[in-house]
Structure formats: structure tokens, C-alpha cells
Length: 329
DNA sequence: AATGTATACAACCGCCTGGCC
DNA sequence: AGGCCAGGCGGTTGTATACAT
Image (cartoon, rainbow, N blue to C red; front, top):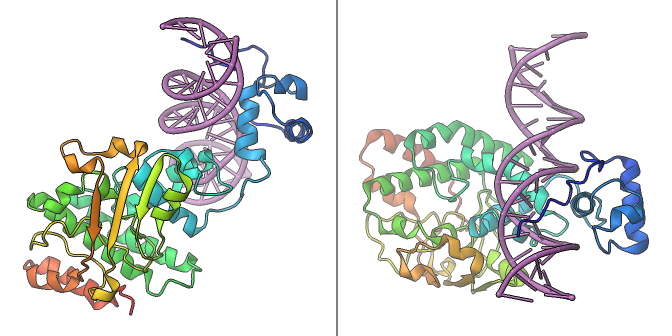
């Protein structure tokens, strides 16, 4: 169709808004509503295009906009939803009242993306980064980030040391990378599809908080239907959602969660989402509309101790395992 | 103190979609 | 059916500020 840009008229102001312009825009919208955005600038006495006015209003001036730093809970929500939806900023914003898609997008690009990279997690796939050097090099930053996070964390629900979590996450990542490289882990193959990312869906939390995102998604997305029976139990942070349809063979990655049966509550998630179709691994027919279950959790620290023959790895593992584990009582 | 560089985020650009005629 | 328009969306850019040298 070839429509022309709305802002190509000569003489219209661009760039940062002045306080006077803001006041004019707010005053006009409070009195008359925005009506037609194209007609608004003239009516409000603004030398701007309608689109610029709309963006200024929706991203900055709207009275219900929440200003200030993102909370850790908001961060976690963004990370979880991004793992499910990708760069669907408006959909993500729909789950964060008072936050705009633009703000979330900026925050992702400037903060969260780097945070994930530092932790050895690919911010696009939300899987561990696949080059070993990066994973190993991430250790100092990872621990530093975790310590920082510990300092910043005011959430009283956090029951254990964030450094321990960071170490556990790193080790988990490394093992996954090794397993993937050996190309003998069916779980990793499955992880290439949507559901490999949905470990966030089931309480995946980099910072040790728990959250049921299935409910959020179900409640807030018209195009997203997530039926979940997830029972909220904290610190399933490292569990993979795709474990139990696949026999737990010795090459699959054990779970970083408690082994006690009473804590291993069945999880069943059915996802049908047009946004998610992009994530489906077309080579996997089951991924287009899938049900997966989880009812088996196994602490992997013990198993690793038996299987790690290399002394270097054993040292790391032993050091990590000597720390209190993030297993709640 | 001056300059260079990195970071954060507001704002813009261009494309897409859906509604209306 | 096709053109036009308004609004939405995601990617990118521009600019102010912070920090390093």
C-alpha cells in the first residue's frame, strides 16, 4: 500500500519534549480525551505529529505509569515471560501494571540481557550458553552478580545464600553444556523447542523466588491459554519441565530440586499460543501443542559426585556441594 | 579540569494489522 | 476487493548523564 510516514510534514518539531509541551498535551487529554491522535496536535496547540503525541502520552505522561526502578519481582516476571514470548514487549507489559512496553524493552536491553549473559545464559534462547570458555569465564561475574543481588534483595522469602544459587546455576549450566556436547542427552534435544524454555514457567527463578507464571499468562493474554496445575512450591528454581516422559537415564541432567516425594508435585501444562508457535521445533511434532509432566525431582549434587571423574571438575563440584544447598526443608 | 567512553532511556522510524468505506 | 487511515508494535537512534582516563 505504501503509506507515507506520519511525521514527514515539514516544520513539525521532533526530539525531546519540553515541559510546556507536556503540559499542553496533558491539559488537552484531561479535558477532551485524546480522540484522533492525528487531529490532536492542532487542537492542543502542539507543533508535533499525532504519533509523537501518542507515544509521549502512552510511554511517559499517562497518569497510571509506574516510575522508578524495577523490583526484583518485576525483573523475574520479565525474564520468565521473555523466555515464553520472546520480544513480545507489549504482551510482557500487559503483565506488569504501570510499565510500558518501551520501558520494559529498554530495561531488557540495558540490564536483564547483560545479567543473563553474565550468568552464562543465552538471553535469546534462555538456555545455557554453549561455548565452554564463556561459561567458565562467567564464574567471577556470576558470583559477583549473585552477591550484589544478595545485598539488594529485600525479599524475606529468600531463605538461602544467593552465591550458592549462582554457583549451582553455573554448575548446572556447565553440566548441561557438557551433556549437550556429548550429544547423548535426549533431554537437551527436547530443550530446543518451546518447552525447553518453559523451565521458567515452572518457578524458574534466577534469584530464588518462586512464581506461578502459568496463572499470569492465563489471566492476562487473550491469545494465550495456559492451563496449569502448578502448585506453588518455592525453590524449584533449577528444575527442568521435561523430565518424566523421558526415562531418567544416566546421561540426562539431574534436577536441582528436592527429592522428597511430597515436594514433587505433579505439574501439567498445556500451552496453545500463537505467539509461541514461532518457538516450536518443527522437527518435533509433539511440540506444537504439548503436554508435559513433571513429578520427579532428584538432587543432582549426589549423582555428580559419583560420575565426575575428572579431578578438576570434582574440585569445583565438591566446593560447590560443600555450600548449603538451596533445598528448603 | 578536560576529554573520551559507556550507559540508560526517551523518542523516532518503518512496518504491520484491522477497521472502515 | 482494494485503498485509506489510525493505531500498535518492535527495532533503532539520539541525547543526556555517569564514569574513567
